[in-house]
Image 1 (cartoon, helix red, strand yellow):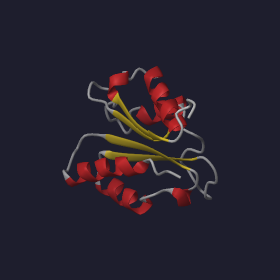
Image 2 (tube, one colour):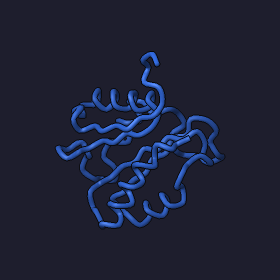
Image 3 (tube, helix red, strand yellow):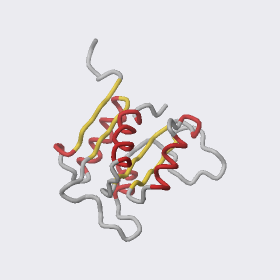
Amino acid sequence: GGSGIVPLMAMIRHRCAAGSLTPFRLLYSSRTAADVIYAQELERLQRSQPSLEIFHTLTRAKPFGWTGYTRRIDRDMLRDVLAPKNGAPPPLGQSLRAYICGPTLLVETAANALVSLGIPDERIRTERFGPTGGPA
């Protein structure tokens, strides 16, 4: 679970290596905490990069004391993740870009939710894998 992180990880590593201060929020969905790919690296990068915020959601088992989300990505979760944090300006500015990677259903659900939150289609980039819903 959570392999949609792979293309996004290249973006995160690049921005961190370049010293980017542009706000970057990652919402990472996995079945369980053990399924979080790059968990230690993501924790390290988040600690060292104040402009990088990482949010996790677990769709199956959650460890004791878990404080992250515990459901599939939905509109309410995306609205919460996109809300201003710690007095920072809201990320819904002219430069907002959304990148969604994962199985088709997750990608379509998240993209539709972002559009319903007012993010223009042209600012949403997707990479999906799995069936597209049409006949083979």
